[in-house]
Length: 359
Image (cartoon, rainbow, N blue to C red; front, side, top):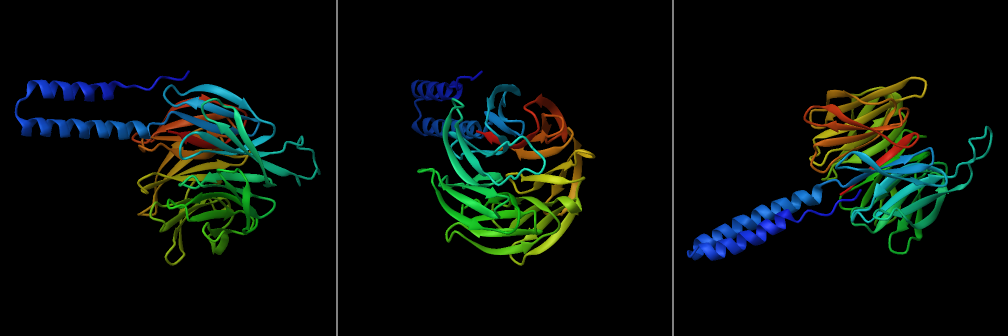
């Protein structure tokens, strides 16, 4: 189902240079036309680099689903040994990292004190490249933007594991608050902001010193974070408050915006303008909305109906699409951001959780 890369614009560029050289005797005009052609080609190349090729879901039923972003059809289902909780594609697009929690049959009273796994897959072949043992009940997994490290939150150990992407060794285990879960890393790869579900705080972890610098009290049951590109604004979902916290990191002031029932993940678009909040609710009373929050005005601007148990969310680099996992429908919703409306619904594996895009 893979498509060959389109070389149409490259051919146009080469033909443009040849025709200009042959048909125009004015050097200045020739130079101007060449520059214009080069600029157009550069823009097209930049657009192509931002195109989403595939997106992946972590399915708690024991699989990872790979979807072709061009057709919105399932490319492949990758079986895993355990519960896939979260996924992220590496910055270069070559690897997919996933957290795998051992599946012990969900027996009542049985201890979950068993190390989890960070699984690394080749995005081209779907083959396992490496498995790395981390802490108990690994939750989210995130690459630093520079690609040097992968971080994994260990929910039951109250720690985050730092994995070197060259050696695949755990080079540091850093203490956090209680119940670390979702998190994001600053664009300069220096700081991680980890939501601690068990104590209503966010741990600020310095990745240069490999230590927790401080905790910010944000509100009840923080699940996931987002961080603005300039590193000045922190976004946090507050599951028990049905709210989104917007934190000014210069003074740690917290403002709250009401969203839907039981917010889970949040994703900030590339312009730092809108935060998209997936409202999961509960299995008994599932929510089925995504709330759009204007970060500057601190107001909810739209509520978009998706599937039951909206959980994972991510936006495309061009800001035109939002992809949402619906845990209780076993689907992904594709949202058109101009219409704020679902345009595609794709069936994936059982209980999709995290989601990540590959450019």
